[in-house]
Length: 316
Figure (tube, rainbow, N blue to C red):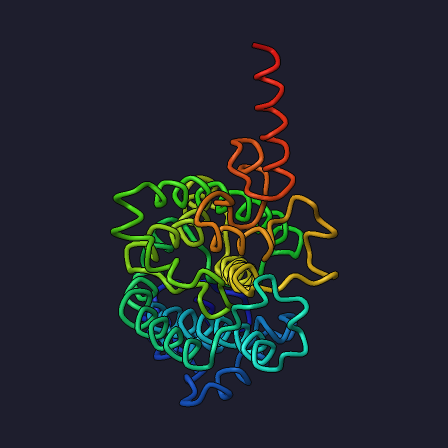
């Protein structure tokens, strides 16, 4: 945690921070903005975001609480904030021509029931894990101090996390489609054969922990091995992953959808077929594992398999 003073000091223990204030002429402010002003006074070289970040940890004086509140609020705002536009799109009808399964528009009742289930999961399953995140992350060497890492550092690490998570998601998701595991765990997520944005995290608690490991666990493993990861990079990665998951469950295919520009990107059409057919297309972000292991379920893939079978028969 950052402590404001004429020189930059990086202290993780909030109790040390309190002792510093007791032994100095700089008194801790009772308000967040008071902390912000003190930090700005002595650290003009920091940018606004870094000052706000340092003020938050200094004001809370408890790193676990500061990280826990920030993580949970960020997750809820991003998840429901990104889902909200899809709720409007479903209710308008103007975009029905872009709906992949156009005869299956979720009702407001379905959306509301899904939202209640997801909220319950967030408070009972994800919140306790978020509360334990800071101690675990610090044990693995995750940085919470300032200044922030460079944009380049964050960009290449996030790209690596996308690849790591997609690999974990493919194999664990495919395993969850094995008979006993599907019935006991994954069946809940497939309640909606035509997915919609809010249903991205509509899943059993066990599935939330299994697939969620790819999002949170992979960066933590990276940090444990490299010792180089800032929690801000982690936050940006989680925001992007939430956007990806919600958009993949949106049920809409637009001319400007990302996979038209990045052919290896999965997108909504890829995952929508998975929900409709209950088979294939196990990846989260990319298409390559499904392609390499022949689990892709698309018209082109089905045509390719038929041609391969026909060729094999002729060769006999």
